[in-house]
Length: 162
Ligand code: S3P
Image (tube, rainbow, N blue to C red; front, side, top):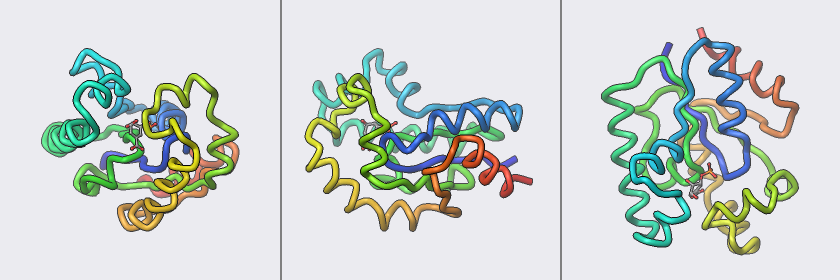
């Protein structure tokens, strides 16, 4: 199986969908934010605060190269900006989890908002959301409606997996 790469805005459900897909396909989930945070011994929020966004994007670029060289048969849940700053197609088959901004706002808890540096200001976050739509779609092999019950999202993706 080619890696399954999940892209989409913060709160679109990449990690949750990824855990389900990992179970169904009997493979492992790689959460890019989690591994980057672990490798740098600090949270993504702290990496942004201590080194800035540009540095974080470089860490993401290195991560993509590592996946391309070393990882097969995995589910990759990307950070929301990964495909915006670096091409992700080389990692595997790319699924864009598409969902309205209003729905995302309803989904995210205060703790989840606090841990995401780019969601500090809602109107700025909406601008980022709008600006990213075209690139998400262009980066994807398949666009999935993520505003459905999790089982439906997962089964829709599984239809594309041999
Ligand atoms: C970001 C999304 C976050 C994380 C970082 C930047 C973005 O990941 O990588 O805060 O630019 O959209 P999630 O999509 O998992 O929240």
